[in-house]
Image (cartoon, rainbow, N blue to C red; front, top):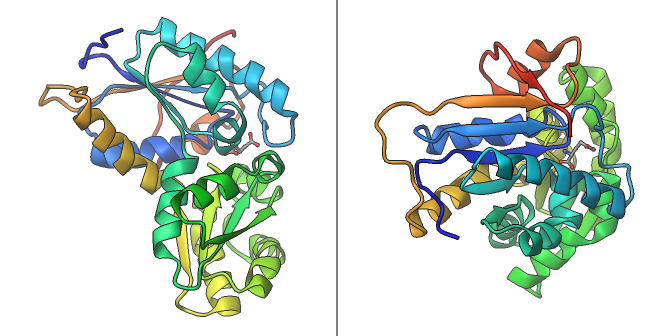
Length: 272
Ligand code: DGL
């Protein structure tokens, strides 16, 4: 099907964490309209089975298709890890995930051919990062580490101080012991803890350690993809961001603006 380049981009995540991807998309694709869907009623996905995540992901994607989007960006690492192929097969529009861009950035950054990945339990056990990095370079060894506690810490805004520091240290320990020099933040929520993770990683591994924020890598790949397919919006006006959620959390505005990095005034509640 030929998609209209003036149509919005659809972005979805299990919750509000995917707004970290929207924040990066906004920096490089300021003129695009974005419809963001956060499945806040069913977050987290990271602890659920692959078949449940596939079912939830299909519901989110079909809802965005009904909004006439020209492409879908799966901001959730867990969905990208277990449901991307199914979405690509079932949907008649481009579907981009967050694993491959982060994997490519990490594979080219490592000097010792060892990459660590902090992610949810679902993403880690899927082996998706291991496969994606191996597809870039068979020389690179990938060490995955599930870091489940970092999700609620980011949601709560508990991103500085002793508690996130201790949690980060605990999760980084196996990666430091394995001798990695690059660490991928393989979860939508972790960029909010970037500073604390970087400080701890530097203390344990050394100042040369590189932390890859996959949201950043995703945004430049999406921009390149839209350009190559002639799908960029031709308009000098700034694009809009429409927020759809399946539940309205009490502290929605504060949480969403923390992830987005700018104020959020409203969201529409939808049923999937
Ligand atoms: N969005 C999820 C991810 O990036 C994190 C939150 C969840 O577990 O749903 O993996």
